Structure formats: C-alpha cells, structure tokens
Amino acid sequence: MTGDIIGAMTALHFEIRVCLSCHLRYPLTEGHAFGVRCPKCLGETEVVLKKEVSGEVKSGGKRVEEGRMKAVLLDNIRSAWNVGSILRSADGFGFNHAYLCGITPTPEVDAVQKTSLGAEEYVTWSYHPNAVQLVKGLKKEGWTILALEEDKRSIALSKVKTMKADRVALVVGNEATGVDPELLDLADHILYIPMRGQKRSFNVANAFSVAAYTLRG
Image (cartoon, rainbow, N blue to C red):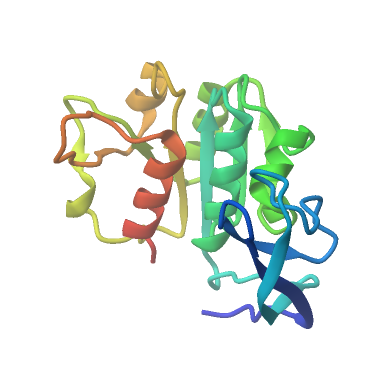
C-alpha cells in the first residue's frame, strides 16, 4: 500500500465542564456556541478537566492502493445526512471515488458537508442522473459491480472476503425501495448482510460501513 498522508499537526483544546445545578457533564471546545452555561438547564458550570489533543490536518495526501480503484455508487439516496455519513466512511475505508446518482444530494448541499466533516475533499465525487447508464459504461471499462441488497440472487457478505478486482464499485440504494432492479441485473455479485434480530435491514449508511469494512482489501 502506498500513499502516505501528508499533513501538519494541529492542537485541539477542550475542557470538560460539569453543571452545578443538574450535574450534566459535557465537553466544550474552543469557540463552541454552548459557552460556559449548561446547554441543558443554563445553570453555572465548572471546569473539571482540560485537555489538548493533537490531530492531523491533511494537506493534499491520500491513502491509495497502488493500481486499484474502489468506488461507492449511491443510487437515489434521499437523505443528505446518509450521503455525508457514507462519504466519511468511504474515506475511512480507502474508497477513491463516489458516484452520486439520481436524486442523491451532492456535497454542494450544506447538510451533506455537515455530516461528511470534510471527507468530500479526499473522496472525489461526480454526479450522474442515470445510474443504469453509468454502470453500463463502467462495466465496459472493466469495473466489477457489487450491489448491496436483499435479493433471491444475493450471497451473504460474510462469504466474500475482499474486493480483489482492480476496479470495484459498491452500489447502495434508496432507503425505501433499495437498489434499482436494473442495477441488480447488471451487478456481478449481489450481497446481503445477514440479520440476527427482528429487523430485516440496517440504515443505508450503516450497511455501507459494514460492507466496506468486510470487503476491505
């Protein structure tokens, strides 16, 4: 694996405060809107701990596997919050690109940026109105298409160890209707996450994270 993260170190100062009235304990970072009044009851608070944490600021570097491309395709995701969460996870799991399709909001929407926390600066993205046309083109270019969906053709995610192909796109679908049936027909493999509780599915952002971690190369 190549592609070291180029960056500088920055210090984050924060303090832990406790309310003298309701005893709420909460962190307060520099410049936060909460201020020194309790955010719950507006009572007076006192500092019980001060802390400085060093964090890395990325300045152009990116973790990339030599010669490999991993992309996530968001097929008509409705929620900007889900989109931002997926972008943040995509960066954490080493995805290079995000294809945003149909009604999926882009990072130009404030709510996406608030949830992605800047991940859109490190995961490149592009918008495409028609995911089916996009995937047909990707397949002609040699991409392997994996769709995350419960279907009679699905195989358990646990049986697939890694994304071994050089160019792989993982498709996640609409929160209510799932992945477009025509995309499922185009997929090289359809995967599902076995559920052990009473619910039959995870939130789409959570499902992507589970799949991305399981399929990491």
